[in-house]
Image (cartoon, rainbow over all chains, first blue to last red; front, top):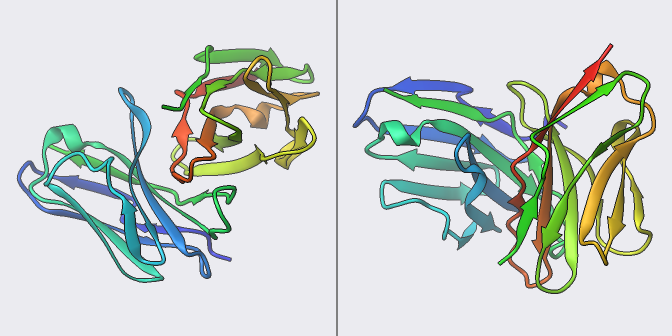
Length: 115
Length: 114
C-alpha cells in the first residue's frame, strides 16, 4: 500500500494568497484527519471526517480555513486568505474506523510557509 | 479534557543501552494510548498502542511500552538503543467518550550516541 499521500510536500506563498493542500487516504480507510504541527502549539487536530462527512471541526482556527472530502479517496484543506501565522506543517491521517480504538496512519505532511 | 505530558524535551542515551521515554496522561474514563515516531521531514509513524489487556505492549522496531494505571503513565522502552532510533517521539491519548481525535504530547527528542 502506498500509504497516505499528501501534496504538495512544500508550499511557499505570499500573504493573502489562497492555498490548497491535498490528501489521498489509504485505500479502504473511512476516516480522515487533518492535523497541524507548529513549534508553539505542537500537533493539533483541525478537522476529521467519517465516511466523507465532517464530524468534528472544532479545531479549525477560523473562517479562513475550510476542508472538504468529496469522495472516499480525496480531501482538501484550503486557506483563504493565507497569513504568516498559518505557516506550519499540515498532516493528513487516515484510519479504518472500528470504533475509537482504530490506529491513525499519517502522511508525510505539507510544509507551508506564508511570507 | 484529556491531556498528555512528556516531561523530557530530550533524552540522550548511548548505543546499546536501554532507553525510556516518559509519558503521563489525564483522561476521563479508560485511556487509549499510542506512541508515534517522527523522523526529520517525515510524517508520524505508528509504533504501538494500548487498548486493554496486558499492561506491556510490544510494537515495531523492538519498542515496547508499559501501561501503569495507578501512575497514569505509558512509558516507551527499548532494551538496547540503536543510533537509528534517534528521532522525535510522540505519546498520544484518546478517551472512551467517542471523540476520535488524538491528543498529542509535546514530543521528546531521542538522541542515541554511538
